[in-house]
Image (cartoon, one colour):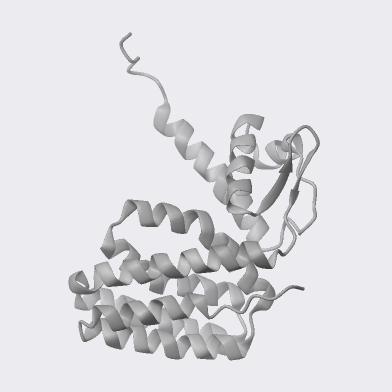
Length: 216
């Protein structure tokens, strides 16, 4: 049958992604705490949407390890699980390694300056103890080579597992870790500017793989 021209496919997808993003962020920043029970009716009311996109979002969050779903019983925000975090960290580190390796040749001076500016913001946020600003700046910095690489499969993997890593960083972040990351960022940018794809890729991997993961 012919596809109806007025089917709101894009709008539905955007709604679904927005609900997922808002719930993901609420879990990452602690608004929804570990162990908290998530009821789709309450979440739908809170977000002003129907239950369908909420249920879809919870399924995606379960795949990433941010919630634990027990069919027919309950869905709760996952507690800190070292294995889950370690697995996500390893995947995220590997994806950034690939992104940088693919991107170095295509990075422009404007791209490099965007990375330097993000690292200046990151340093300032670390010095001021502003974790939210530090993580935003970190995302901006590493987002440059990811965008330049233009690898959609890689981006999809990062979208799924980076929130798990960010959540762990919020729980474990220290000023000492932040200062070490500033130095890694400086080295990453220097190697990118020099066109050293392999060296830069190794630093990108180490930047994310350095997150310490131990049981509570």
